[in-house]
Each structure stands twice: as structure tokens, then as C-alpha cells.
Image (cartoon, rainbow over all chains, first blue to last red):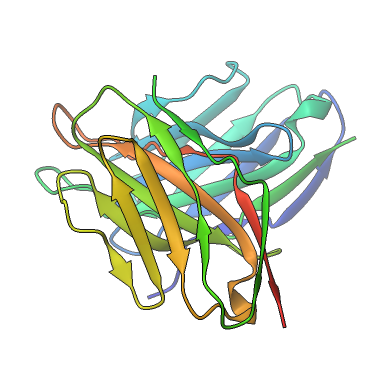
Length: 116
Length: 118
């Protein structure tokens, strides 16, 4: 099985721009979560999607949004970029299903976003 | 709110020796899961080991084992026969249990950078 893939791997943007990151989960996985990783704040949960619905959201401003498609692929969008948004954005997928105990999360390689 | 604390920012171990990484957590929940993830330099995060809170037996995965002390809210990782490939950042993580609706939200500690000396 192919692992979690994230595109693009690297991205450079300037302040005020907006960006969209993509995540393709492992085949059969229906749950996708996003995390932001920075040296200062560590790993912080952004949001989680299951069956195209946002199930949980972290403490981030409304500039951060996401969505999930019917094929479980997910995108996250950051509008009006700030210097502090520079980070590694990680996506994780799992086989969570209704009535099934939550399963292990598998992480993608991440997208390194640099805001200038 | 749940929190995870890793008090050792950096650790070093000689190849073939044993090292223990510490993790403590705070929660009022009775059902939860604990994990250790490994993030090698410039490589993706992978799961090392998981522990269900309702299980008293400590989890083991080959050279990796945990010491889970539920009452003390402690969850340490022991790496035996350390290898050069074990060098990485290790994160301890917490996830709420499945009662009342499951969630995949992981709460991470700040990480411990492990160096393995040849």
C-alpha cells in the first residue's frame, strides 16, 4: 500500500498570499488530520476530517481552513499568510470507521511552508 | 485539558546500550491511548509503540518497550541495544479514548532528541 502523500513538499510564499496544501491518505483510510510543526510551538493539532465532515478543530485562527473530498483526500488552506505561518504541515490518516475503534495514525512527509 | 510533558530535550546513548526517555501526562479521562512517535532528521514521523490505558501490561515492540504507570501518569520509552538508526526526535503523544465519540486528535509533547554515539 502506498503511504500518505502530501503535495507540494516545499512551498515559498510571501505575506498576504494564500496557500493550499494537499494530502492523499492511505487507500481505505477515511480519517485525515492536520498538524502544524514549528520549533517554537512544537506539534499542534489543526483539524480532523472524517467522511467529508470536520470532527475536531484545534485552536487556530479562521485563516486556517480545510476540507475533505469524497475520495478522502484532504486539503488545507491558509489565507492572508503571516510570517509565523512558516512551518512543516503534517497530514496523518487512519482507518477510523463508524463502530470501529480508532486506529493508528500514519503520517505523511509534510509540506514545508516558508513565508517571506 | 490534557497535557503531555517531555522533560528531556536531548539524550545521548552509546550504540548497543539502553536508554530511557521520559514522558508524563495530565488528564482527567479514564480511557485514552498513549503513543511514542519517532521523527528521524528530514524524514517522516513513524509510530514506535502504542499503549491502551485500560491494559495493565506494558507494550513492547522488539527493542522498544514502555513503562506505563497509570496512577503516576507516566509513560516512559526504553530502547534496548541502541542502534545508529535510532537517532531521531521522539515524541510522546496522547489521544482520548473512544467513549462518547472517537477522535484522532493527538496531543504531543515537545520531543526528546536522541543521539546515538558509535
